[in-house]
Structure formats: structure tokens, C-alpha cells
Image 1 (spheres, one colour):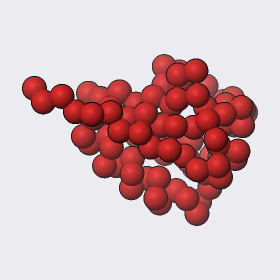
Image 2: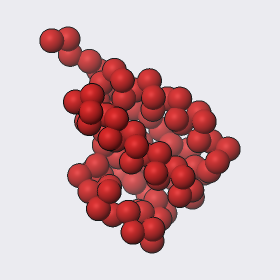
Image 3: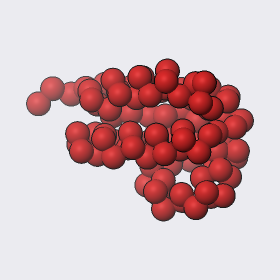
Image 4: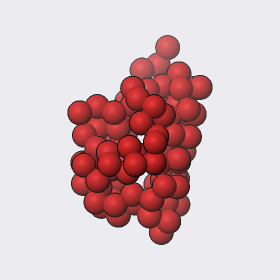
Length: 96
């Protein structure tokens, strides 16, 4: 088995509809080739659609037998996850 390197996808400060296409494209490539770390410490605002996209990416990574983790999510991102009732969906993904 070939060991693949972990890829890091950094989220911008504002994760909104304008930034989703670029993030999605990076995630599609990353979850197909190995483990993924989402760098989320600098997120100031996150759209609901972005959170659902991350859940979808995690499911794809799981199906491909790769890990997807969210590294040090900002307080704003954590608050959005909780406010939308998505805590259970992100359980196990978040790495403080």
C-alpha cells in the first residue's frame, strides 16, 4: 500500500458563497488522494452551505478510507456549528 501525504486545506476568514467553489475544488482533490486537515483557526464567518459541504467532504473521505479533521476551528466556526445544531455531524472531526 502506498502511503499518501496528508493534505491541508486552509479556510479563508470569510467562508461564504463566493469562496465555496475554490474550497470545494480543493476538497474534491484532497479527499480522493489521502487524509485531509482543514485549517479553520482563522475563520471569522462561515455560511451554512459551507458547513454542509464539509460534512459531505468528510463522508467522501470516510468512504475512501481517509481521515478528515478540522484543526482548531475558530470560535465563530464552532458557534455556527452549534447554532445550527450540527454538533453531532462534526463530532470526531474537530481537533482542538
